[in-house]
Image 1 (cartoon, protein in one colour):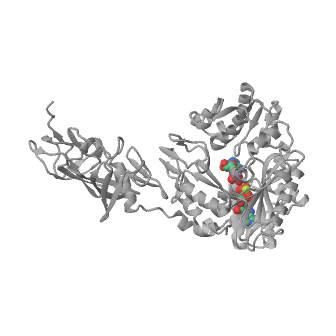
Image 2: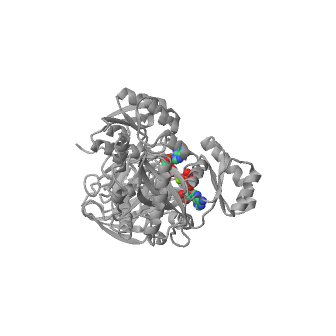
Image 3: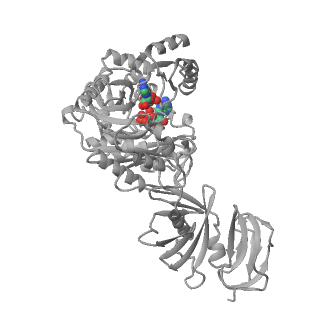
Length: 637
Ligand code: ADP
Ligand code: ADP
Ligand code: MG
C-alpha cells in the first residue's frame, strides 16, 4: 500500500477520499486554489499545496502543478476524484511519466470511452446493446437529418465529447431538427472544443440505470445497479440502489453487459456503465442500451457502498497499489436499499441558479451519511460546483429507506444561502417516486409543484419573531418581566412584511399574535417548538421547510428596548408621528414615535424610564437608518 497519496480535487470528494486513506494509514496531500485556502479539504489533509488563483484553469486543471506537488511532497500516487482531470488521458500520462501511480484506469481505457461515438462502436463490437442511432463520422447536416428520419422521431442529438448534459437536444419533429442540430453543435464546440454529434433514438419513458463496475486490468466484477432516473435537465438529483422493479434476470443481464464492457477495455479501478432503459412496460432483458461509460468514481457511489458494504475508495487504493480484485462476483450481495440526495446552494424559484454565500449554520441528522466539503462559516464561492452535501440513507427496504430520506432532509439545516432543500423534501414525498414509478421526465412533469415556494404559516412567523426578539442569554432577556409585556416584531419574508405582537407571560412562555391568530409558544428543550437560528438580522426557521426572515427592526434589542439613552431609526423611513416632547417623563416601553418604512408602521418605544432630553425629528421627516430620533437624559449614577 502507498504511504502517501495526493488528491487532485476539492470539496466533498476530496474529503471523502481522505477519510478512507486515513483509515488505511495512508497520508494525504491536498491541493487548493486561493479561493479554497481555508477549505475543509485543506485542513483535513496531512499536507496541502497551493496550486494558484481561483479559476480552475489556473488551479485544479493545472496537471503540471499537481504532478509537481506530488513529487515535492513525496506522494506516490494521485487520486483524481471526479470532474476536473479525472477523465483526462493526458493527465494520466503525465502522472505516469513522472513515475507516479494514477488511481484509476489507464489512459487507453479512458480514451476508448472518452467519446460517446467511439465508445458506442466499441461496445457494439463487444456485444453490448447500444442505443439505436447514428454514431459515425459524417457530420453533414442533411445527412444527419436523413439519419434522424431513419431512426424515427423523437431523436436525441448528443455531443460526442459531451458530459453533464451539455450539447444535448431532444428533437420531436423533423422541422425542428436543423435548428437543434446547430445549437447542439455550437454548445458542444464551446464546452468541449469538439462540435461533433451523434443521433440516437430517444427512448420514451426512459429510466437511467447504471451499473458500478470494478476491474483490476484483467478481471472485472459489478456491484449492482443504481437508478438515477430522477433528473432535472439530464442532471441527477436523487439516486437509489437497487433500482425499483429490478428483476434477477434483468440485473443479471445488465451486470453481465457491464462486466463485458469493462473487460473489453481492460478496465482497472472503479467505473460506471450507464444504460438507458425503456421503462414503459417494466424492466426487460432486451430493454436496456449502453449509453456511456464514466471512467471514474461517480458522485453517487455512496448508495452502492451502502447496499454492498464495500468501500469503493479502499478498493481503488488497493487495486492501484497492485493488489488483485478484493472480491469475486459470487461474494457480492445486496443488503437493503439506499438513497442519495444532492444538496446544492441553488435558487430553485429562479430556475435552479447556482447561489453563493457564507453558510451561517449547517446541521445534519446523525441518521444519514453526510459527504460534505463545507461547514458552518464556509463560503460557497462562484468558482466551483455549489454542492453543499450529499445526504445518503440506508434502510432494510425501499419504503423504509425513502421515509428515512424524507426525515433526514427535514432534519437538515442550512442558513446563509438558498438551497434546493425544499425541492428535495417535496421530491422525496412525491407520489410517483414513493411508488417507485420513476423515469427521467418525472421532475419536469411535477416541476411546478416541486418548485413551489414555501409560504410561512402564522406559527413559523411566531417562532421567527420570538427568536428575533433575541434569546441569546436565555429566553427573552430583552424583556423585563414587570414592565410592558408586549412588543411588536416586524419581519420580512421574501419582501412581504409580517408583524407579530409578543406577549410575554414568563421567560419561557409567549403568546404571539400574527394575522388575527394568537399562537402560544413554550420554550422547551432547545427551542420554541421548531428549530430556528438567528444570524445578524436574519432568522431562519428549520423543520420540514426552511424559511428565512429578515428582521425589519434590527436595533430593536440593543437600541429601543434593552436600555440605552437614545431612540434611533432602525431603518430609513418617514416619521409619521412623534409622541413626546423634551422634558417629558416616559416609562420604559412608552410609545415615542411612529416610523413608516417598507409600507409598514413601526412603533418606536422608550428603552427605559427617564426624561426626554431632546427630540431630533418631527412628523413628516425622512430619516436614514441609525438617525437619532429622541435622546433621554443621562441616568443618575
Ligand atoms: P455523475 O454522472 O456522477 O453525476 P456527471 O457526469 O454529471 O457525474 O459529472 C460529475 C462531475 O464532473 C460533476 O462535478 C460535473 O460538473 C463534472 N463534469 C462532468 N462532465 C464534465 C466535463 N465535460 N468537463 C468538466 N467537468 C465535467
Ligand atoms: P452525459 O455525458 O451528459 O451524462 P448521457 O449520455 O449520460 O450524457 O445522458 C445524460 C442523460 O440524458 C441520461 O441520464 C438520460 O436521462 C438522458 N438520455 C440520454 N440518452 C437518452 C436516450 N437515447 N433516450 C432518452 N434519454 C436519454
Ligand atoms: Mg452520463
